Image (cartoon, rainbow, N blue to C red; front, side, top):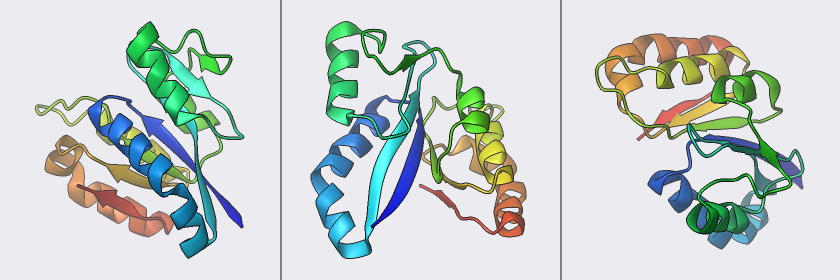
Length: 151
């Protein structure tokens, strides 16, 4: 069994959907691939962040946001920003799920660029970075020997 650590930037509709799917398919993924996929960090713009290198309880993360409105009640609460998490957390893949800025593609493109420069895989549900920086991000991923996936 190999650990596969995920860092999530954003925990809105797409983030919660990913969490629900991962919870439902975790055992199948492990059986089919040998990878134990866990989310080690979640950052949000206004509700705080969660960090636990051993993996977070995604059902609890969702409950906290829905019932408490923030992550503050969690023992894994952090005020870490997305950029701090990208630079400091040990993860294998970053999911970029932050709100879209169609006029600049930022800060999503900076998030992706930071992950790729660290040699981490990146997945984005954001179209802004693709519209503004696709070739640069594609080429950076290739140069660093990692994957850059997008919706």
